[in-house]
Length: 253
Image (tube, rainbow, N blue to C red; front, side, top):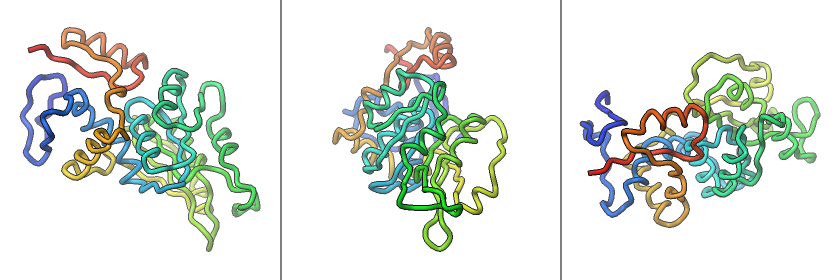
């Protein structure tokens, strides 16, 4: 719908985009379900269909990435590797369920992921130990991270198993070159995920149920609150990467 207003206290919306929720639920919680939560959690649950025991790497752990971490934990993925440039955000991701954290400003993220996931009992097409996660999620969409998620996933082996999946969640601002030979020989997949492949009437109630059951700590995910008069301050903080989870606008009536 074109009639969506994010910096307004009222909006006109097509009924197909409206989901009824219990009025008793904290409005700060429902405010972030419709984008950050469904985009991150849906990418893990719907687009990738992560299962118990699958290994995942999540590049970028802002609001969307945190939601992906929570979904991975809820679905019992292991390990859950968080990658970011900000130590505070990485520690925040650990509180939400990340088992390992990598600061990509200090370490080579792909090499570290491969170290954490090396399986000496399996070999790839070239006879090397299999290394890499089952699923890598780019929740940023930068050229660097898009180039990292394919080599971060494990290779397959012809006739035995398929390779891992690289899932693009963040909106890209540029094109990127991928190693087509690696994708072919290793049977790796590159998948796009828009809005977490969610069906709102199905998934919104489910994520709210996760919240009510204590699986999804949406209260903690809202880390900043601004009035409409502070909107410029809010956008500046966002641009500087100073918001750990999600920021919301609070209207006083």
